[in-house]
Image 1: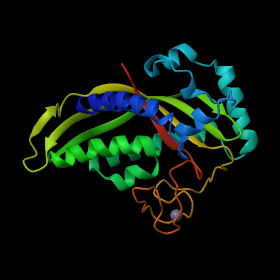
Image 2: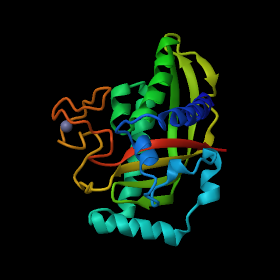
Image 3: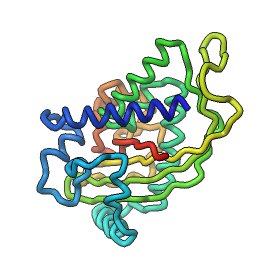
Length: 249
Ligand SMILES: [Zn+2]
């Protein structure tokens, strides 16, 4: 339950942040959208609609989604939808595990700057409060691809993930449950949007525990830089990164 509230706060904060970011000029994905309005294939943040309802209002048909996936495949012959879905499955478990461990280094590698900074704030709050948000028995029930966009500069794919888990928060010393229920299984649905630069080629051999660039064991600092190859790997230059999470009722 706490995790759901956290996600809602994150989304609201994220929307507010995006509005502020429209006026900044960083290399981040958010500013890309706002500075390239002529790129009609990639207009997530330009329509100004309520993010919570966006997918109901603007959802593409399956044929249109497939058309965008075909465009990605033309650029990247090693991209396959089935592999992508299985990668999402892996990333979902990876990120949830990092969240539960309160491990900011692990969380860092597959999240864009803005999403990471939001999660970092929430995790630091758990650490300060000496609490751990436990996410037991996570089981992904369904992953459905609900949107895709391919543009020369950026690709994006959005999936709807339905999963079940036991979501509760404990005191780190006493292990006493302070919120949620250890025994109640809850189902939830989240919409995850992944992005990458438009020229990235899928590396079939990449393992989720490796740097997406050099393949060294993951050791990514808070700026997203790998300690081995000194490359920033969190902007989608080397593979898919998570740029947005929306909670669905
Ligand atoms: Zn590296």
